[in-house]
Length: 325
Image (cartoon, rainbow, N blue to C red; front, top):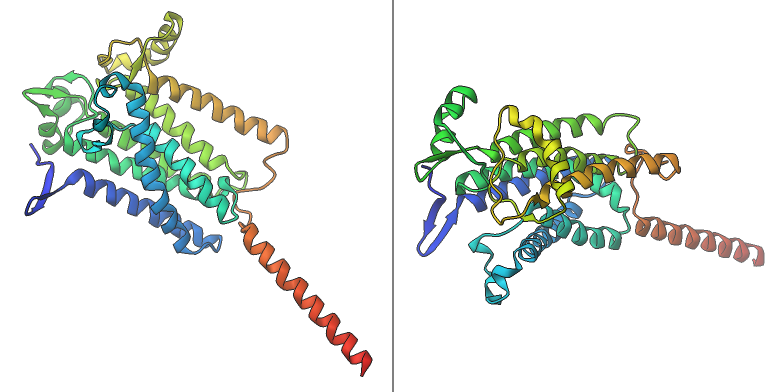
């Protein structure tokens, strides 16, 4: 089994989880900076964006998790702030990051969807890398499987198979399924953003569609899902959509006794919702701006307008002065 601690500096333990998440954020940042240069956006803008987005994501991830597990925290409020004990949710992280980034982007005078498009590939590659932090912690895995399934059916290398052996039981490497899905998604997004038909905002919406499709099916094998008790028809509908996975996988056990995994429900709603948004924006003419069109800050435009007006006034003053002479 691989150690979760990378190295120690006296009493301070530096864990692989933190190193991997830091690496994921850095690579996502570099992708955004590189694409931002095409639109003449300075790297400092995206560095500041990261400094705002990461804390917002952590706060959102924690609030989301605590809200669904309130019974575990209501009698011990101090535990809410002990994030190192575990308990975050990726959809909460996305919600928190979007809220924080939205206000920063608007304050800088940019359109949120234009910047979100640039950041979308960075988001999905960050998630692809970040899942390996779950691997090091032996968490976010699926239900029990045989060792032969991992070695002979999936042909996984020893270091993954051995890490999926938790207290004598082998488990589905759900982290790997999601990581690979996101890597393919990265390739799709990189291809899409050079297509002339792509409109502003659609790469960001496409990210949500791709990620949510994968999350819907992968979530079904996990054993740590946040679940709720919903109507029987909804549970049956979600199970029917997931049923093709039973050819290879057995569904994971729901930890908290519900009948609907909330991440599956949210993923389904996002796929439908994002598809509707794309269609409606095109039909109503709201998607007239293309992805490849220039991106300009309203603050810069206002500044240039003021400078231009001042130059016109100066020219007028010079003309009047010459006439007087």
